[in-house]
Image (cartoon, rainbow, N blue to C red):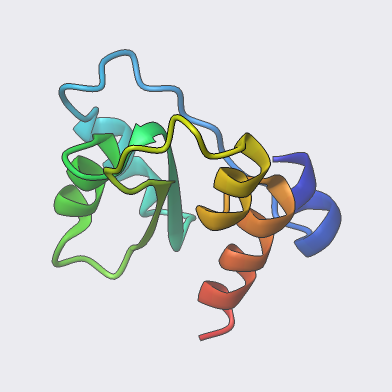
Length: 104
């Protein structure tokens, strides 16, 4: 949130879902009023994760969705800094990805 503000001047809204098994449709619907991009951050694998549920919710709308997380793979011997770089998990890389989407 702070990196988006510092780099792009974006006042990001942070939503921490209570359950990863379902989306809060009211909250997601309300974001349409003054947001044009939703970024989800997975603490694990993207496939089948919460971000896919958010993407499905916004499917036919104009809302852009960026899902950030890891691919399903065995990576227990991969250094964490390599995983962070590979999957764009650092604040700097997330800001770059957001900037690229918003400039399209």
